Length: 324
Image (cartoon, rainbow, N blue to C red; front, side, top):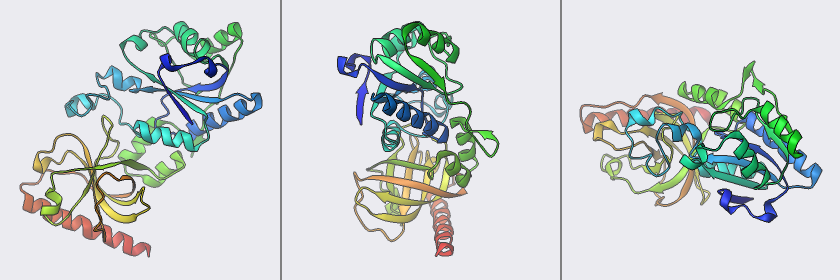
């Protein structure tokens, strides 16, 4: 799959395509229905299939955050944007798995946000991609005044020779599938429901980075993963599984949060793995969430924190014993 970063990197060979546009946060079953339709239409026309996404996501931009400053913002500022289900790398890999030919990633910045719906159609869809067929979600809007919607696109398509269709609403258990619904489900730690909406178990992936080694000092070494998102839909202590690029798989317990007992700075995913004595630094791993144990708390001292961590580990070990 080809990744094109920015309108300026579109070339004449990118003309002629079937595309869709959106945030695709989570790449859930509603998104998958859109992507399947794009691929089917692209194959029928012998054209490449394209997914157009934005970085940062628009609501992240409007909250005053960018990928360069997300770690420095205060929790109050961060919470103004929706919790992000996927960082860019996770989204890229998931869309690639589904068989799309190209991703066009547009930088959502001050210049881009000023584009009108008409300018977006002219610069991105026509001059950039030479669009022939466009699939959009039932609630898609764009342009600096959000005047761009399905009706607008159909009129633009009729004037410029491309066809526009929507996918309609995808429902599961009588409710519309959406990223916001999945966020609410994850906030409640309803991981089985989240899996139904996503099509796969909910996980967070990333590269293991150096930490402050506090976990090792108190008998619970952790593999630390930077979240690379403004805020996570999860916070607390969880039972998890681990799989990394080396093929290693472990059970464990994880904490997502700011580590208030030790005055942590920024959200971090810390994972303690059972029966693991490997050096995991710099490995890329996927952490899958199975059940929540408790909320993150600020304890009065390190000794009390250690006691609670030991309880968390015992709880998780018993959970895995029951699965055998």
